[in-house]
Image 1: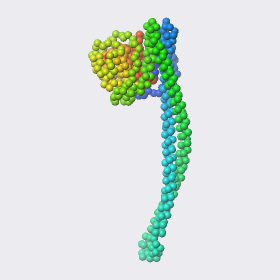
Image 2: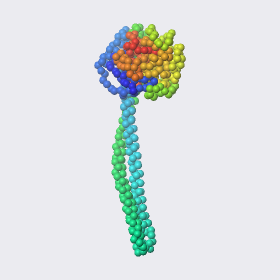
Image 3: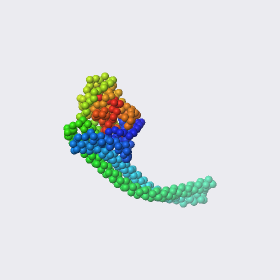
Image 4: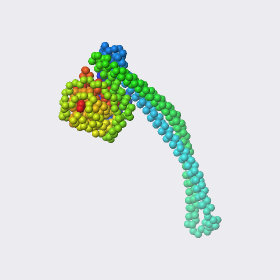
Length: 474
């Protein structure tokens, strides 16, 4: 069973979109807890202020119009959209809970109505049984006392030849009397049961009235909650549409930026916005039609993975690689995108391990995102790379280049229980895997990542101690 990642305050560039991350290699782990509204702490507020101030300083000398576009897009990425995501998710959960409650009450109402119908049928049948019992008693009497002729009766009284004949005759009459008494008693008991059932029927009818009122109220509440959830989702989509417009405007005006710091700031802001747009695209593509099972074993191939995120912005210049790959691969370059067609089983001189596409990876997991993103960048990636922490070793075995140097498009591997800059800890059972989207001038990396603990799929964050991790390249 997986463990929740331990989290402390995270002074990273950009806020996490969820309070916990779960990730399995071939598998989904435990569903993330429901998001809870909480006040912004002083440290979080100070981090936001510091990030905003840093961004403004990077934009020194940029025209006010373009600088405002970058700042507004950054605010959408870091504050407005994450808050709207949380609000929409909370509203959706409230709507689902209200609907579930209404359905449960309706089921109880239906059960009570069925009980009523059953009791009414039993009461009706009890009356028939009572009438039948009275008729049976009358028939017994007729057959016992009036079934013989007058001469037989006289013979019984005057011509009995022995005492035994007399006793037998008397016992027969006693048996008739007992039968009559028993039949009458049974009929009376049935009538009493009928009266008790009528009392129960009255109680059930009263309960039905209460449940009907309760069901109507809960149905109205569920409808109101669904309406509120829809409104929250509409508000979120409006913010995302606004972000798309601003990102496109920024891309069209990037040529106006003259300083390296301003260009980097614009690239980072645009990349974050792009990652959020992939989440929107993923949700609109029927969850990529991948296997949603929550078991650790990768299974059930399904090649109907139709999610194709948009190309990433141009990557930053690559650092000189420090190759320490143990798999024997050599002579590979760091160009992004690469030259592997989607689903390639053999590329860059080695087996990719791609046999069933991304179908073996569960929905929303970090491994599924790493597969999707690497495929979109035409970089080699396998179907059974294992849990997040296993990707480096699996890749080495297949001949991939693996080292500790980050580069755009590389799969960033987090070991089990590995501390990430003191801000959070990778899952102790599964580890984690992400994809590098940008190597920043200060050595930090902007990554995209999946995982059921994140509010969005994919999510993003910036990691400062980039050299502490392994990277799967080609």
